[in-house]
Image 1: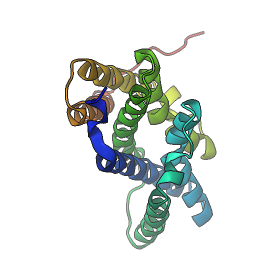
Image 2: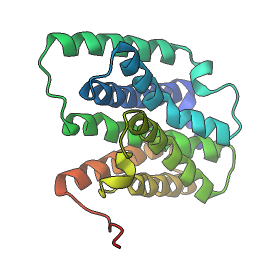
Image 3: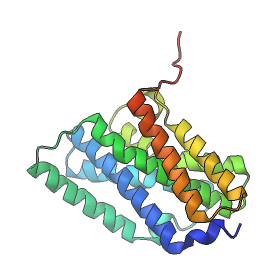
Length: 212
């Protein structure tokens, strides 16, 4: 598993940071769209940013949590919340659903890769690693939507979401087993996951809905 660990601590932290910022931004925009107050915006931003990684660490029995090990992530999200609120108050930015989907898709890809990575480093079964990628990538958005009083978009908009993380996770696993460098697996997993999600939104791909 040496090639999995070739990410290095710096690259791993950068990926966590990028995913955290992307999901925090999606939470901030959704909270602003729902016209929450400043505390609500920060709360939703933090839940979206840290929810998936926290559940991953709980399931993998990793202590302390990733945002406790790297407290700079907390400061970064808090700063982003403040700056975003100031920007949104001073500019007439259209808070559409489409504006939220872009950072959400990027965060899905980044966090899916980190979830698979953490499980592989612990030598867990491949299916478990892929599921950890899905959980890490999806759960923050689920918390964001629940707190904003709506059914999570991951479950009800019928356009592939968790499925994209599932495919991207298996791509990561395949590259890992083939001995590819860690950064190649990372970039490919993020590109496949986020790319599939954006493509699904653009082409309006639909999963079968439950019919009574």
